[in-house]
Image 1 (cartoon, one colour):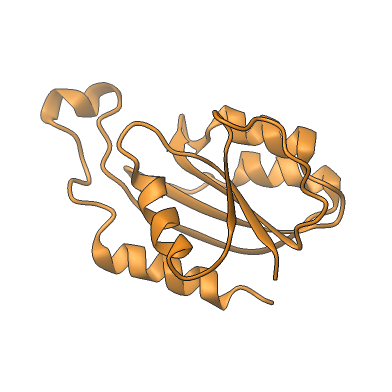
Image 2 (cartoon, one colour; image 1 turned 90 degrees about the vertical axis):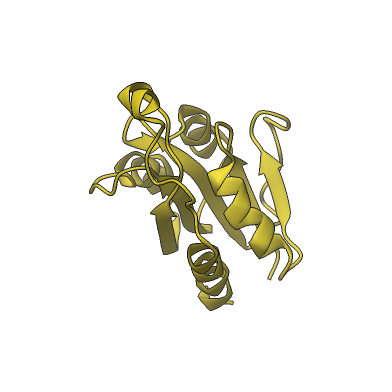
Length: 147
C-alpha cells in the first residue's frame, strides 16, 4: 500500500528514530515539512503524520500541512514522541484531519528525550528514550496498520 509520512523532528531527533526504523522495513515516502512544504498526496492510500510534542500538540507546521494539503477521505495515522505522558496530544491533529473526512487507522506514541524549558535546567527528562523496545513497538505498530 502506497504510504507517505509527513514529519517534523528536530531538537533531539526522537521522532526521526522511529521513522528510520520503519523505513528499514518498508518503502515509504517521507516528507520533512521543513524541506518539502508542498507535496501532492492524492496518490497515497495511507498518510501518516509524525511529530514530537510541542506545547502539548503536534508541531504547528504539521497541523498547518494537514489542514492545507491532506486530500479528502484518506486513511491517516499518527506517530509521536513526548517527554511527559499526558492526554490530549492528538486533539489538534485530529481536528486538522476531521474536516477532510479522514479515517484515523492508528496512533503510536512513546517517550523521547526532552530538554524543553525548565527540563533543560536539570539536564532533560526521558533520557535514553526512545528505547530500542519503543522503536520496535513503533515498527510493529506500522506493520499492524490495515493494508
